[in-house]
Length: 209
Image 1 (cartoon, rainbow, N blue to C red):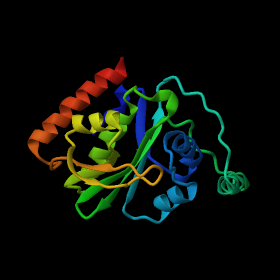
Image 2 (image 1 turned 180 degrees about the vertical axis):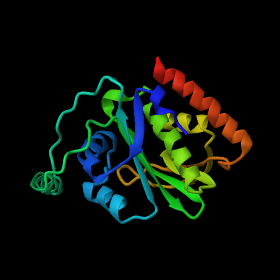
Image 3 (image 1 turned 60 degrees about the vertical axis):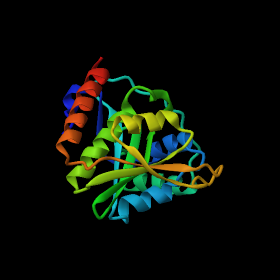
Image 4 (image 1 turned 90 degrees about the vertical axis):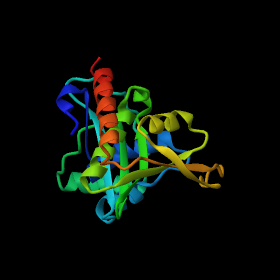
């Protein structure tokens, strides 16, 4: 388990009250972003889905937030919240991610960090939290797709033991780029668990500076 008491950020389950902040990061991060409706479906109707958000804590500085243009769905949700006096979730977020659990395989569906907080270890913390979360719900391995051109993401995944297991031609709809399929070793292997513990200790030290 991750000891968040030592860190300036924490990772916790995503809720529908996080969607406005999630969509801000989504549109800033992806050329073919998901819609708020898609995330709402994932949270409420997809029993395979497990989604997380990362937040600053313990007085950590927070990113500047520019309010994005809100869709009709988001405006409607905002009015519903106001009418029911439901408090908004703490904001802003610094990142989010999620996976689908399919039999004994967890498939990372998305991971993104707030533009103001990239290259600070938050994406790595989210990945570590998802690896631990996947193991807790019975995953044997974790898989994902990554753009061939996204070397920084590929380097992070290699660091955590992901290896290329195949490719999907013309996978990305925005430009027809290929995706690499990357997969971890068996999560319960003692050697892999020792590797994860070493990476966790190194990440703790980095985030605590």
